[in-house]
Image (cartoon, rainbow, N blue to C red; front, side, top):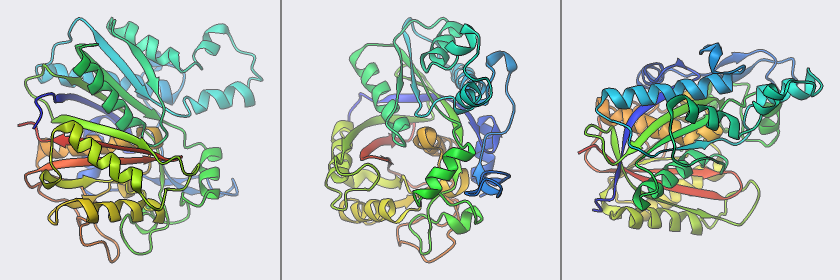
Amino acid sequence: MTDQHCGLNGIGAVTGYGWGRESLWNGLATGQVAAQLAEGHGPDRDEAAWVATVPEGGDELDGPSRFARAMRAAGREAILDAESRGWEPGRRVGLLHAAVLGDVDLWRDFYGVRDADVSVRDYLALMPSTPVSTFMQEFGFHGPAMNISTTCASGNAGLITAKAWLDAGVVDDVILLATDLSSAPETVLHFNRLGVAVTDTEPLQACRPFQEGSRGFIMGEASIGMVLSKRSPNPYLRVLGGAMSHDAHHVTSVDPGATELRRCFSDALSNAGAELSQVRYLNSHGPGTQQCDRAEAAVADEMLPPEAELYSVKPLVGHCMAAASAVEITATALGYDRGLIPAPPQAAPAHPRLLNGPTTPADGLTLKSSLGMGGHNSAVVLAPPA
């Protein structure tokens, strides 16, 4: 196995469970759902809908919106966590921010309430580069800083890019942030119209990845912070490698042949210097939609060893879009640290590989897949810390 791994050394989280990684872990480990009924989020605007939104909170000095406050809070928590575990920032610390729609609340206010009449300072706050720049300023980091956007695969893409930077010696350390607080009524409405978001049923009944009767996913929000480095003495897990591919097939639908998804899995393991026989778990994209679940299950059955099992935490935390894979990587990292895979309980007849509730992890690697809308395939290979 390659020695070119990097360690995930610190974690910060803001999710539908609340502010802080312990809120996330407690919710996942006890099988609670993060979603609640939100007034005015239904398809007809006057209906309530199940949505796992980030509650109000954070430091007002971090910005005027939940997006800005959540991003800064998650990043700051990750840095403090990494330092408590023995990490010391190097001379060149880079920043990657995985985001897709950006600060939806600010843009809605800009156009719908303030008629674009804002101060220059408030206008600059709308730019995707501004949160990245202000975070770098807070900590005095001088490595490269950039945004990444590959729809729901953005967190995996950020992790793969972070490792590439570290392997190439571009940076000494990377702060990876993934933020999506876009579950405004308009966003929920259109994903409902696409036929993939469910708003009218309790989450564990609506979202059943790899189980009979699954109708899709519950919308979720999150911001996740991670510190990645090759120099930490006490990582949560090791990132061995990863890969991405593109279906070049359809703007929303998965290529039914799954050719590029198979190649992505194979390339990820090759990049990691690992064998398929070493994979023990598939931490799947698992949104509960028929297309994605069918593709991932078929590729898992075809490629992974018989003992490899799969799970998805989306029924609990929701589908957090740009932050989805980062939330799910965090579930694996905290699971390694605390000796528990926080898999949701099964609610219906299921694929034989699917875990049924919290499980003590067995030896082996975790393959984390994320399928971004539009054809973005991604997979990262994760290993226990030692």
